[in-house]
Length: 211
Image (cartoon, rainbow, N blue to C red; front, top):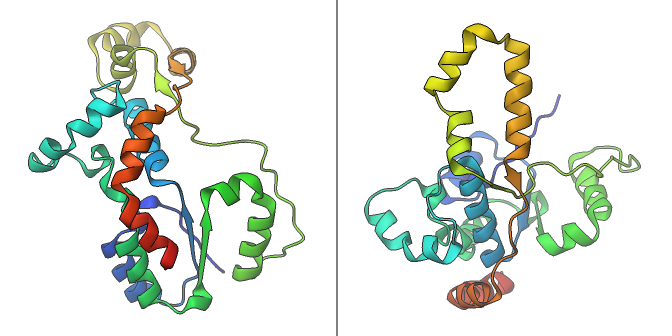
């Protein structure tokens, strides 16, 4: 019996150390996204979760130094995880090359079935299987109303007031309907912000390219 696990939090120094200690023979698959795009995606996740107080990505980036000083959640400090080279170097040093597969996000978008076939071959799964990749999970979105999101996700007097009059099934249906209504497609990353943030990553990007 084989098992697998997927998490962006594995791509950090502590993750590498723990994987090497507990599952040194693991096959490791890394999908690298353009770092400015990755930071924006993390920002959108923070907004969708109701954690991020700003609606403007540039403002959130400007607040990052003070957030770090005040020990905010790492999930709300968006630029730091985009410096890939140190962690990538640690993984390349800690594991044999045969156990690693590294892809770019653009490769995955362009040829997902090819990449899946290669992964299947790596982990010993039938590479003739063609999985259904039509459904996309955890897509980027932002709340139309942060206030409504907080009401839906946290204890609130309105929910306590209505609970005796609504059955569990009906409450779930109402919650699902309101949650779906409150989700909107996010705007694309501002090209100026993307260019400015990419420039911050320039040296790291060149180092990753060499690795």
